[in-house]
Image (cartoon, rainbow, N blue to C red; front, top):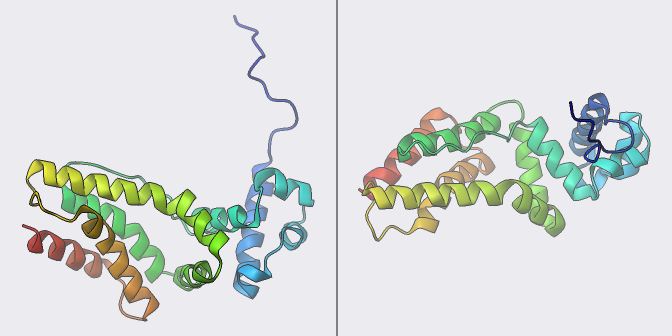
Length: 194
């Protein structure tokens, strides 16, 4: 039996209830006053914790807000690669469509508008949420090109951006965002690039 304790970390284990309270407080403050209405002090007070508890989890306000959006609006999902571009693109677009068309839609849309005005927030969103997904979709498209599912001269970057760009266009302009939209986008991409 090993008694190696070199990997043990000192201090108390983080309380998941504190994590939840911080994220809930962040979203509540965002709903009330947007990004500029959020301070670490305000989140700590709303969550009923000390500022140090927030800072231990989030070094910046941007990281806090992005994580609250990512976790609380369920923007975390598996990045699948089954070898079927249609199925994989639908797996990528469906969670976004569900969030935008559901009760969290207005919060997510407000967040995206704030992101345009706040470069630090946009940078954190890009780094921690969008970048990984964007590269995954590019890999899906490159794989489809390699399999002959799409032509060799396919503009990989453009095709990878199209689904989310059209979905966001609909959401930001009050147009219908539903499962049929995702299917229309993906099927049109495949038809135009066949």
